[in-house]
Length: 365
Image 1 (cartoon, rainbow, N blue to C red):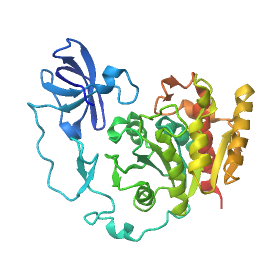
Image 2 (cartoon, rainbow, N blue to C red):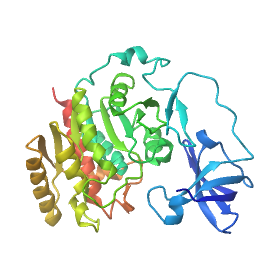
Image 3 (tube, one colour):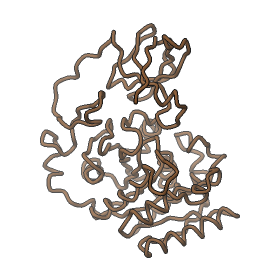
Image 4 (cartoon, helix red, strand yellow):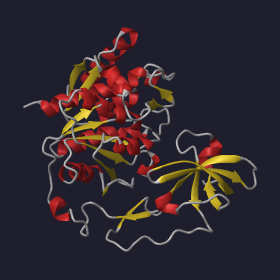
């Protein structure tokens, strides 16, 4: 299951909050690879340090997990963290399981606030399949709001588990586009730690005092090319969780003009399955008004999706005027499935359209 390699650190390539990428020379293979270390888990290395690597996904050439991962720096073991509260274990029973302070556990200062909490008070929650949609959704929110809303990001555990893997989150936080993050389920490393999506939404509303939540899995969408075998089915479950807690679910569509796979052309089958089959409650469905042949395809697919949902999905056609400019000022480089903004503009416009619609919900009386 795991392919191990020993290596020696040659240099530090780059770093961002909670993560460092090194150039590491493999001892047996005599090649240099990119290796990612989560400093909170394994500490930090120096040039010349020996490191133990997991190279399973790298060797297979996968997009998901496709880096060498530093699992240990044997000669530079980090000191124990300071004593403190918290007994929630995430990435449980893996060699890198982490103990964190759950936002609602008994030792948390927020325990009393959350103990009987049962509502997010009508807060809109924009649900997306891909992590790459997050900055585009927020760009649409900000462009269409009189004042920038207080946005919290909730990361579910369908993709990367450490939030430190996401440069998007680090850069959005630095730019002031998100007020805080909550990691749900087995994911970890957010400003707040939650047991599941339900408690994450409650924490976002009641602790972070968010006006709106953007919710997606972390980077690393997993799919098998089958009807049900993809991690994005959880988007439908997040719609249900939002409604159960008295929120306003907004289903952001995954759209592509450039994906070579028919099942992802126009509105992806991921969105059609998650929102049409998995979600069982009413939700808003912002549909971007795209031009040309793609626009006709998306229009027809959206109509079919609303019908398949038994009219539970409330369709809203969104004008895209001004959203190109809003996306152009994103503090995060826009990329999805290896494609940039110019290569798959429709993907980001669809996400921004969901943000624009949600801004209207915030300003409604």
